[in-house]
Amino acid sequence: MTGKKTGIILLVFFILLAAVFMAYYYKTTREQPKSLPIYGNPGHKVGSFSFIDQNGDSVTDKTVAGKIRVAEYFYTTCKSICPKLNENLSRVYAAYKGNDEVVFLSHTVDPEHDSVNALKEYSRRFDADAKQWHFLTGKKQDLYDMSRLGYLIGAEDTVDKVPITQDFIHDQHYSLVDRDGNVRGLYDGLSKDEVDKLIKDIGELLKEK
Image 1 (cartoon, rainbow, N blue to C red):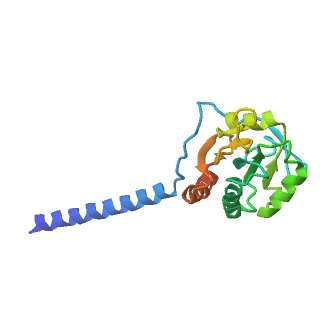
Image 2 (image 1 turned 120 degrees about the horizontal axis):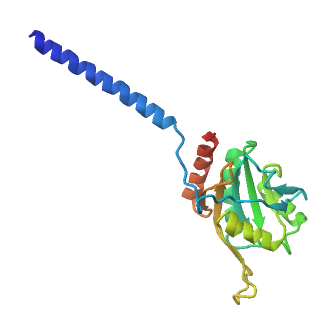
Image 3 (image 1 turned 135 degrees about the vertical axis):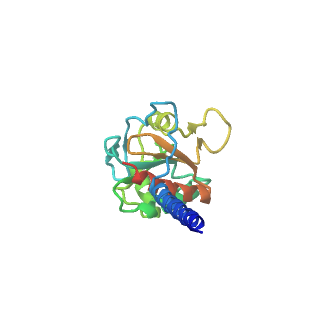
């Protein structure tokens, strides 16, 4: 009987030990931030830039250094996907409004027509604080290069290439960039699920040090 009791005690002991270990493992792994991938070739960084926002202020890579940023491309007279893109982005903005570690960069693909005043008027639709949500213009080539080579999303002037009434093709994705300038995610701005994921992933990046 003594041997049987000893065996039962040891069995209970090991079950309790395993339960404690599993509880600790679950707690520590749950608290660890999820690792988001780094897009692009090894060593790819978004790079330097200099644009003008809706207040006429200069916004550069130094302005957003050390911050998490969400970048997109649009134009103010777009009647197709842009209104929905920015409506959805405003939901992401609302989730982090007032958080000075997160900024939003909306670049025009039509700088010839999207003046500072036009961007200012457009930004009012989304109650955008220019300190956190910048609507940007600049030289067309610089804007397009930053889209393709920096944020890994597409923007193209098609006026001389395709006989269509809409002169610009731009990607419907948002690009998520971490504090070090790495692209960490691309999200379909027309998909509710993707927008929800972007909101969560920004939270994960905020946990990274």
